[in-house]
Length: 236
Image (tube, rainbow, N blue to C red; front, side):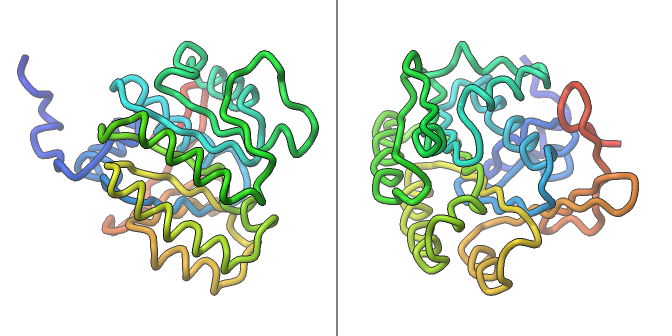
């Protein structure tokens, strides 16, 4: 079967964002392997970027690890379904949730088989869980979502978070993984954001200038206007 026209110039060191129009702009998507820092206001746009990225991986038969720090895995699944993305058939197969949220609130669902850790402060447990998933992937390309680093930084000193990310980023990159680091704008010291930028491989900045949302990618000269609708992120 002939390759679709837009894929003829897609770079081999890229991985799909899950949004076709953005893949075209980025010559194939996010850097792969690597860490992508997604910075923006609190809201559903960053979340939608994470869901598109994860769902695209599942559709491609890749391993996906979703580190749930801000909401339960069940809530992530519910939100994805509102965008027409059915994650449930893939859970505990190609999609592994690392649940660092439910036990902290005492609301863990006994019928789920997610990888559970006590809370966002349990960096060693989180590291071990990610190592296990990397072993399961056996060197195949994989995707990881941290939702979000803002919560991780609330429960841990900033220096500890940076050191943890430096180590785990190296391991994930060696394991052919692309990782999305979601982080809220306006709630962190500049030094922390600068440190994250220095160890990430690509930065995505979301903004809300007036009535529309925009996204700015490294290497793309102008911001791209987007909206979040029933199908998730749409380029306008």
